Length: 129
Image 1 (cartoon, one colour):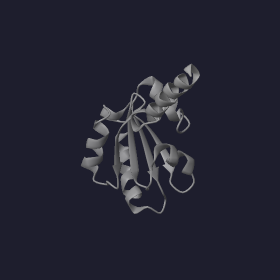
Image 2 (image 1 turned 90 degrees about the vertical axis):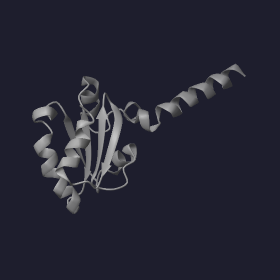
Image 3 (image 1 turned 180 degrees about the vertical axis):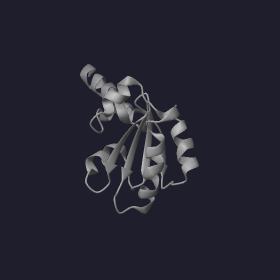
Image 4 (image 1 turned 135 degrees about the vertical axis):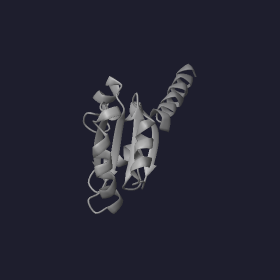
């Protein structure tokens, strides 16, 4: 009986870890370099894109202009190909291209889907600073 209780409490704790708030901790190195950036405490952006996606192509130059520069100098960006990296998309629960997932201290803090307005993208990224 004691082992069953221990098992159930451990399983419950694991389920809590796998919740949206704990996605980074549960997934480990979502993409190569993610865990290292998360451990360093830098803001991280994971951008799911596809070469055929017009919104993605509009987002890319805006993100490139911001990430690594000015206020966003320490932010790390990881691109995920929507067509070929399905395992990463599944870990992040991303269902469409043009999705940006923002992390702070290794934890997901926000998502943006289909936004290409430069001011809105900048405001979204600022949430991680």
